[in-house]
Length: 144
Image 1 (cartoon, rainbow, N blue to C red):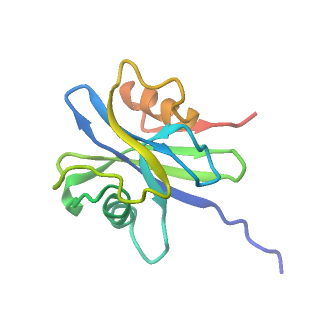
Image 2 (cartoon, rainbow, N blue to C red; image 1 turned 135 degrees about the vertical axis):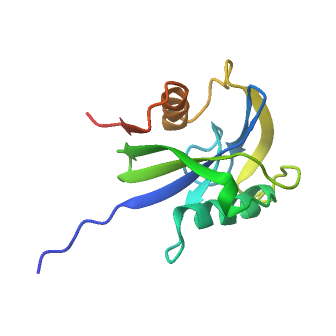
């Protein structure tokens, strides 16, 4: 019997204050270390996209987010080291002040203006933010 293809799925959290977005610098993960991204993680299975994002927000930044305060604003089909589908979720509100809750995976957490993201922003995250600004719900990244 033919083995079915499986695809990785990740969630990315978009927190905005005025015209600023919360980003963290990846550290010691083996993927995009030294570059800025948003709070993100893999879906563990047996959880919805929004449940996975709530879990990751708590694990990575110590934040509590209610299910009804999350909205999927972009989906990206991405080709890289492995093929993935990324869900970008915006939280309209959250509880707590963001902290680096996993210092073994991030070494900086700060707000950046959407008009001047760090030069070392992860490429597909930058591309997704540009799509979101243009109100594009779906994009593809890294294909040919």
